[in-house]
Image 1 (cartoon, rainbow, N blue to C red):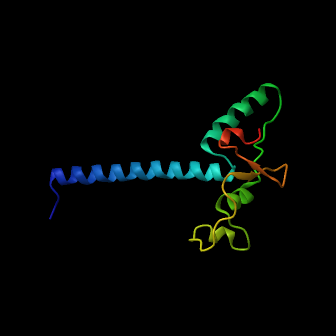
Image 2 (cartoon, rainbow, N blue to C red; image 1 turned 60 degrees about the vertical axis):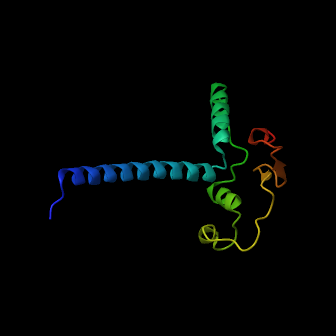
Image 3 (tube, one colour; image 1 turned 30 degrees about the vertical axis):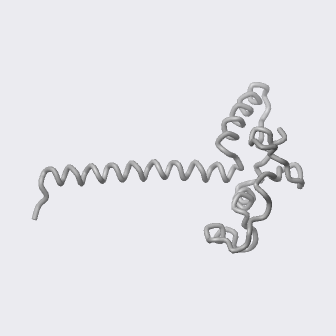
Length: 124
């Protein structure tokens, strides 16, 4: 039994809509993976972008002070360390997370830096 013209149109519309939503979600997912791997929030991304541009005008290079490297950033965000960190981050946790979410370690110090209520005031 063949589909009517309206059913084919509805099926095509559904496929296009589903694919469009899938692409949008993939872009959003990759954006957030990038932010985690570089230890940034969205606000930090734009702030650091401006600082990188200003530093480039002076012939300098600006580095994010909270970027500990992709692996350490991932472990810091998801609070998973140990042998199976790459697998355990996606599983439910039985133990509480360490820290309060208000202090972060920068790459120049082992002492956590307070946010002071805003990601814009990370001691920069």
